[in-house]
Image (cartoon, rainbow, N blue to C red; front, top):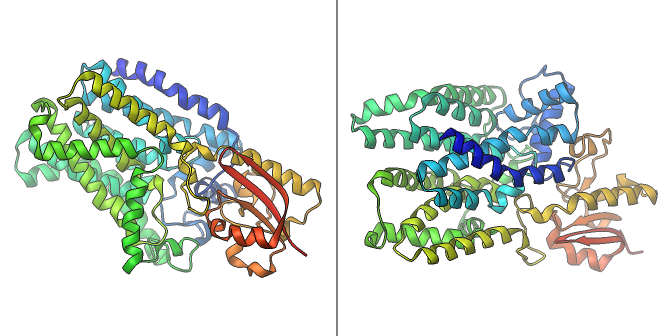
Length: 482
């Protein structure tokens, strides 16, 4: 089996290697400016003397990812190419574990293993995140790794996967908690041993990672007094609780995020077939040998929704696409498994699979109203941004524009020391930290969600010094009208 997994993984890894080749020198983007910029900078320039991060770059997550990048820099140099290359092992892990899961779900069914693998690896958010120096692709790969280890009864492998997420992400820890409950249920259903005995045995592979994660969170809390960011930290606004109509609005936004960026057809097919499985099982071919894995995935889906998806609606700024990547992956997997069992013609299944794949790949081309905030880091539509940013920086330098007077927003306000690993320490003034009436120079892009709703004001009160649009990315340098 391992030989087959390796061969198929090598083929399906090729698109990811091509993406790496084209994006290996891209600057940091969105939240990677913190995870792959500010955090490793802290360890690198302080020679690992301090373990806890300063508040300006501490969002509560364990710092394993930043420590890893800083170590890579010490060994190979502090460059964008090194940071992107440091992600290659995790890209390989993701492809390998995805193919392995497909083969475990469809042993001996070559067409279906290829079908599921391609469908999952073609997810637009996964492709986009894989072009970034992002810890979220680690959560994706380690989550599938955990599920595979549970099905294969490999506790050592499971322990490594749990430890990996415990070192990089609180959200990854939540996924690990879900997987512990799944292992407990799966082992009990498989062996029929007493529930308590099964639970204690299932807990053992989770102890190294669980203890590591809990010790870090406890240490962090003792020294800082918080686990999730407080209002006086840079991410405090995102953790403000919502209520009333805002809470109801967030339920709709959550549904949109699940369907967004190419997932709409795959998700609706999955929901339809889950309903058939629960209430009209005669319309499906249910094979007892694999039904336990299917039921375990349905349980994973419920637990992930309860533990990692729905809680996002309780807070002001957490409803972003990348947080839902592993949840939507399991949802699409369940949908594909049920599609294979659906009592319709094989031609119909092939047509539906082709449509699902095409819609997923179209995710980077979906167009929304210009004032709507988007998860730009989960779509390949953001790729023109990097060349545009370089071009505008060169323009400001050539024209002698005082960049200290330029106002912009996240993610463009961060200095070059963070975004490009250069020696440029200038931090542009964020619009939300100044009076808009006093702004004379404004650097606009539609990837800056904080600027979108003020576009009409800029158009009415500023002139355009430079305007460029490539693909869906728009960039403008404005000067206030005299």
